[in-house]
Amino acid sequence: MKIQFRGLFSRIRTAWRVWRYASRQQGGIYEGTATTRLTLDWIASILSADQEIRGSIRMLRARGRELSRNNPVAKNYLNLLANNVIGPKGIDYQGQVRNANGNLNSQLNQKIKTAWTDWIKKGNCTADGKLSLRALCDLVIRNIATDGEAFIRLIPGFPGNAHKFALQLIDPDQVDPYMFQYPANVGPQKRGENEIRFGIEIDEWGRPVAYWVTKGHPSDLGGSLDAERIEAQYIIHLYDPHRVNQTRGITWFSAVMFELRMLGGYIEAELVAARTGAAKMGFFKYNDASAFQAEAPEKPFRMDAQPGVIETLPPGMDFQEWSPEHPSSAFPNFVITLLRQVATGLGVSYNALASDLTGVNYSSMRSGLLIERDLWRKLQQWIIEAFLQPVFENWIKMALLSGELVLDSRDPSKFLAGKWEPRGWQWVDPLKDVQAAILGINAGLTSRAAVVAEKGEDVEEIFEALKEENELAEEYDLEVSMVAKPPKVAKGTGEDVEEEETVATEAGGEGTTEKKSARVIALARGKS
Image 1 (tube, rainbow, N blue to C red):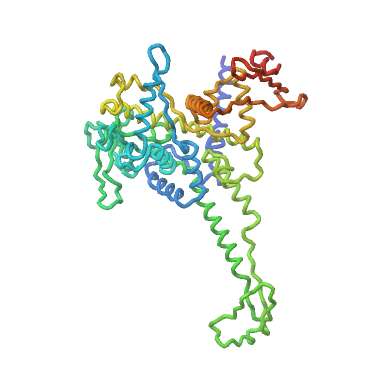
Image 2: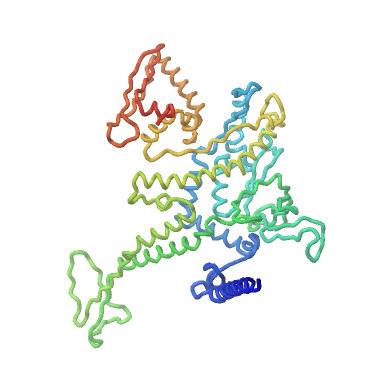
């Protein structure tokens, strides 16, 4: 028994010595904790999320704004962000209120859609009347990326429109990031009040209770630091937290800020060097100082170069050529490498960020777009959940109370069923995607509504437009219907879809299509 314990103690002692040696030599068992000459500049922090950003939030915001103003790469990223998340038409809303029998109430949904469309136009939805909801969403997503956050105030009972509801965009500088207050029973002065962090009042669970907002921007003429307390139910605070209990957001350029700044400086230096090299050809050099007999020594000898002209130099003078080779041969590869790193940090494809389609083919373009568009869809859903849905719920409540929207009840909870339709995208090769959609619909693997929704459109609106088009064609006695004939693919080419034969028949006065494809029928029936 003593021998067993002795062996156990020996193993424990050996493990302790190994751990102590590793701690002294490398700073820990993990290589990432090693302290060597190569890691002396590795800044580490064990502070909370708020303490990490407390001393840097204003500087990060200012530098993010400077990049958005003057850096073309940052400017292009903001354009990509707004174009892909919000889109040219904004994020549309379609009511889905149903009757007692479960069917959609088209008449009631159309009333809601008409009133919503009237409110979101320019002059109604914002308190200053300058922006439509689409333009406001565009500005909000840009500000979130640049400043790290956005504050939107909900104003029920607003007298400026018939809906009695409006939105006000608040500059993040108006919510003082240096306004702090100890929580209840903590600190030298124990006052039974809520804690305030970065100008945001929170309860014991960290839930926002109120926001302390100045009347205007502190830098404006007549600006003041006196803050107004606005309850949290009237403020939407949009930001992307990176850590637990993070109260304020930081600019999305923080991870690539240094690279963007250095890249801009490098391109500027190369541009200046190239321009200097192109503007100045060389110097004149005297072989003998005694040969210098200029009438005005303070004015150097100068000769203007002209193409195709060979000049003669004075005696005792040589021409010393100076032609700096800028931009250097490594310039393109260096810029591409940095831009790829920046694109990775921002979550977009290099080709879109740099507007560079060199060496791109269909497969690589599609692969990059799939990854990038997943991020756009996630941001679209975030904007819908955190911003548009709360705005819609507050709007319909005030629209019903004001009488601008008249329904069979004034209980807004009965009319909240609906779907948001963000923008979609066309693919690189629309023909292949349409063919795949047709095969998926015929095989029962998808629906027309799902295919249309991927493009950011509504299938009901398309059906309505087709119906109106057919009625208009009948009015003018025109035949516009046609049978789409799928392309034929020769057998033995390795394609998944074999050759199809389309036969048009007349049945009931309407053209029908019978597709004869053994593989497609087998897939539809679930056979191999």
